[in-house]
Length: 499
Ligand code: FRU
Image (cartoon, rainbow, N blue to C red; front, top):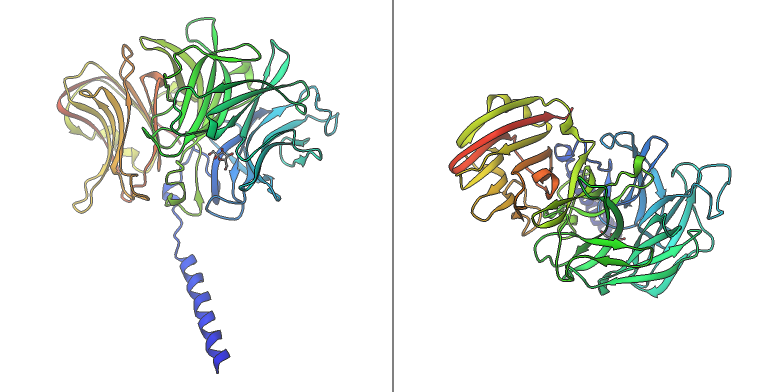
């Protein structure tokens, strides 16, 4: 009798768990169309971004078994245009070690001596994480464009016996004829540079210690040589990610200076902080390698560690930003990182266009009705306005629980903003916030916004200001132009529907 009732209870528990699982609804309405997201399961950082044989390869932190962080392995997708992605089998599965973030180098001259000398060779260098014990840098190689990888049998290639030591990113530094790895000691706010001729033996070149924002921890560094706009000059930029108790809600910062093959020197005062993106949802961006004409572009993870596990999507969690071409622009406030969409979808003919509009209050233009449920880019160029606040509203005026996401500029505080306080589902406390970024003085007020379902990317002032943000509306939205507290002169409004 006792056995029977225990069995009955067990069956009941099993049934309950099963039906709970079944009731998790798929949330395809929030899946972005041109931003990469895996078909199912969890993703965070992009890894090993590389262009090979007409394809852009995106490896990414991936949990092959579930919709939360864990079992970290490298997922893999490829694309010919950075907009349509084909998901491929898991590239580097975890063993006892988790496969954390890292990069891929095209070993054109087979300097590593690994693999088949007659086939193109890719080298992945990533952090092997032994949970709560040790992080060291491992190598794996591939002779089939990244589909399958062999873990090097003499790993690690670099270890300093530290629990937290991660996220190697490697460039070829032509003047000093060596590979240079940038890697971080997260809790010491330290980036280290190592040099190597063969990608296997690494020796310490120098350290970059505790500059800029050191409130958080440092992760995912990269060293970039960027063109300075309208000049023949290039400058070196050290970019890195941070996380933890956010001071101002931002995840990435950069330093501008020089790299001489040994040391990176920051040109700005040590305390100066430059943020890459003022939104909560842009993290761990790293550049693509082996690109045509050495063009530098990157993409980042569009989510935040502060509420990643609560992202209300199923069966996937985590998505990437669009790719952005990088350069430096001289402004009244010094050199600023400029990020322009790649491909630049705004260089084609707009689907809708209007010039010299004067706006007061809130307006849905008849030409904008087609945008519901679509993926699109809106660009607004404005004249000096006497409005207090202006921009775009995505919303629904339902009598009960109206929803509204506001994107624009505040003339009083002189700040760009994305306000998601009323934007729909609030997955975690604090998500319902205003994210803002200071105006770059002396530059035109141009607002460019990508709307791709749950993802928003605001690139203002020709890409010198960025705010990337998620939001989860539950109702159909219309798009309105808004001018509050006065009149707004719109020089030009352009909209591109992305099909
Ligand atoms: C950054 C990060 C990296 C690490 C990876 C683990 O988001 O914490 O430092 O390699 O994620 O998934």
